[in-house]
Image 1: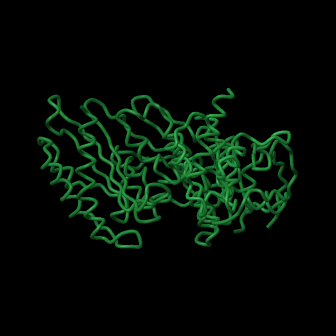
Image 2: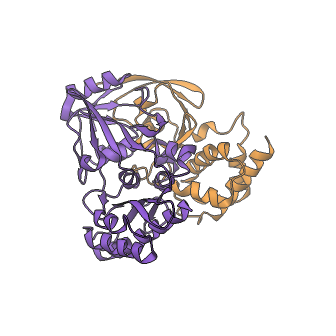
Image 3: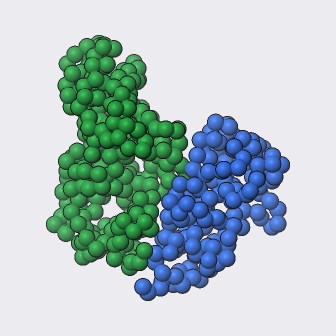
Length: 159
Length: 286
């Protein structure tokens, strides 16, 4: 099958990619561009480890075709810290000990980022509801929820 | 997965490509079903027609009736302020679909065309007497949602035809809607049973003028419990009348037993959830 030339904007940088139309954004991020911070697991949009932001909204990159991303903004975990400084959500995950094996964390942080930009003062119940699309098999979620709530307060205070 | 990718930029171009490729082509909306089915090898279209650059398909229009473009996402339904009153069930159906990543991309048109009997928004649309518009090489046609849904995974859509919108009248007067879902857990779950109800009461608030009860995951398609509706219409809306409607719906549905629940349990859920949804409508009217 013939390849398609694509220009993708990832973490604010332009990338030229030549790829088959069936390949997903997840494939292109990890294999073609070496951005392996975005994880791969279920490939059925169930687990959320591949979550990235597409034009600011959280999506499962395993069910988005790379060709659909032409002209759109993609944010991956590699682009969350700015100028070497961790994002308040990343710092909150560290401060709360919210990371165990770590595999789900990039997706968690991107889901949380999109969510907190809309609702910085979110309650724990709202945060837990939001995290439904991101599975973690280590932590039991308590420290993750705590970290996101705290980060939300920090984001709200910083405004 | 191996296909040619197309990105029509107008409705006319999308319809033209749909007609040209017919059964060899598939329209791609949110991808939450299609991409997964392609990866599993269940469908292998030679042409994929992404709709995301077709203008207007993601619009919600309100003027006496509601028109949801096929690409309106579950998230857009959740966030639409106009749906918080008599159309509350629409929000309740949309907000329990998948996680937020799915609701950000999954569309109402895809939900209808996928024709899962367990779809959550579809029973609400059925309870609203919704109609769908399809456009193909032979022009535009409108079908009721009920006649559009044929069996699991199958609709009356012709090969290459594009579902462009779903419409319904805005309920008026002493009317309310409600949606309830039973699953094995609260999030990221396919419905074991779901119920959408719409009730209109008379001026006294005692008598039921019109009733709609639509059920998911208890028949080969989303299913209207007409017998239960008939038991309610024109009669006082007593607790016993609502329970009777629940029993009629449970007796009339045709659930399967599967990994999520036995057929018997599904009937028990119907018998419980129907009167509960009706009671919720009643409370909302007041």
